Amino acid sequence: MSAPTVYVSPSGSDANSGLTTSSPLKSVDRAVTLAGNGGTVLLQSGTYTWGNGIFNGIYLTNSTVTISGGFDAAYANQSGNSILDGAGSPTPLLLISNNSYFDTLCNLTFRNVNGGSAVRIIGGSSITFTNCGFISNSFSTDGNSVWASGIAGIGSTTFNNCSFNGNSTGSVVFGTNDFYLQINNSVLSNNSSATLIRMDGSGTLNMSSSFLYLSSSNTNGIWMDSTSSSTLNLQGNSFFVDTTNWGTAIFQPNGTSSYNDTFITNLFSQSLANVWASTISNITPANIGNFNLLNSVSGFIPGFDSGNATF
Image (cartoon, rainbow, N blue to C red; front, side, top):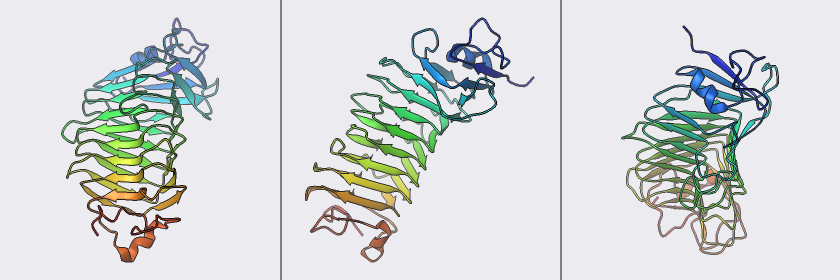
């Protein structure tokens, strides 16, 4: 027997079966439970607010579920996103643990979680987000939008065509415990968090074709924590640094890195550098043009804190 497809609408009813387009459920978490392992949940466009009977958080353990939003009333066309709204609660909108694997989360917006992470991924779980947004989340430590942990190299999170906007304090995305993070074609802008992406311990960050905007509220765009086994691979990204404060687009005191990116710097102090790193592969003064640097800091090897970078 194949796993079901379950339909959800803000105007639905939990007295419905949820198994036909004309009989959608109202509660997202109830739909996920009904879908079970290998099932699919389709959400109509609209807002699903935490704690009001529509949505009380999605919790998955040892399972695989696909959740896709932004559908019209007939579930025939998908445009825009369905909004999962935390209403200021610190409770995660999505909690995944113990080797759970979402095939994909599509066209969902996670917003307004205050005092916790909008999405929390633990215990070696893996997940892919596509066309998702993370908006106006706040957490004083790390991972206001996403907090993710692996187990001895097990577990990964991938973002495809996602946006992170208006999030504050701590870091926007945080990975720890040998975690693998992949970011493709995504945008991080207008966040007032100290760091946009932070990887703690021996994690790996691969990022391609993405855009990071650093304002005066940001200290670091990417912070790879102090461990010799962290790995950072960047390809075809753009970093726009627009700040008068101390800060770097990339801060990696240890580990290995390779870059082929564009750094655009404006309105910075002499203490700011595009990259503060200990060991960089595939970059030498001869091929530094790969960075397409604009307005680099006077007195530095273009775009680098030359006292801390080895070529």
